Length: 202
Image 1 (tube, rainbow, N blue to C red):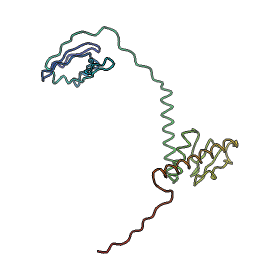
Image 2 (image 1 turned 45 degrees about the horizontal axis):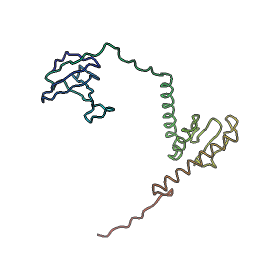
Image 3 (image 1 turned 90 degrees about the vertical axis):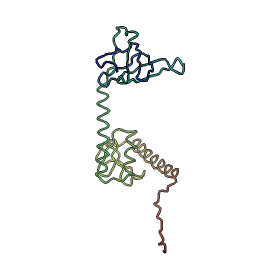
Image 4 (image 1 turned 30 degrees about the vertical axis):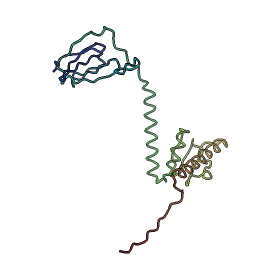
């Protein structure tokens, strides 16, 4: 077994002799002294220059380790900095979307209405629930059963542009056409199918 207090520098070339008398040689890619795990990179066994073999070696099963070449003293490459503002913004949007879905479920909105809400959210960010109605951009209200003819101007909201109203109607119409084609492709019809069960005599 290899000594537990050994430390291997990234980029060093080492040779390991396993308890099965197999010799493994390669460049150190990673080393975890706590679990005694050494990751080695070697030339591809397939012979292709564009590939390499990666081996994870458990040092508990290694009888001998020799350092063939120490790594050059070059520092490790620095990791790219994270755009925290962008990550926070994405997390906030995700939380808001989940909260809107929860709000829809609590309002007793039909699954069809929830699906339409999600479909609109993919194109327009400013979408909320007003009871069981979908409110888009504070201007357009879509009421149950969420068909194109249920799209109307929101009287208490901002002034609605006729183009906006028409655009939302097109989104709703496309949603219903897509749902119809999906149900046809899946072999299901929009109307529920009732099966009649006859009693079987013994």
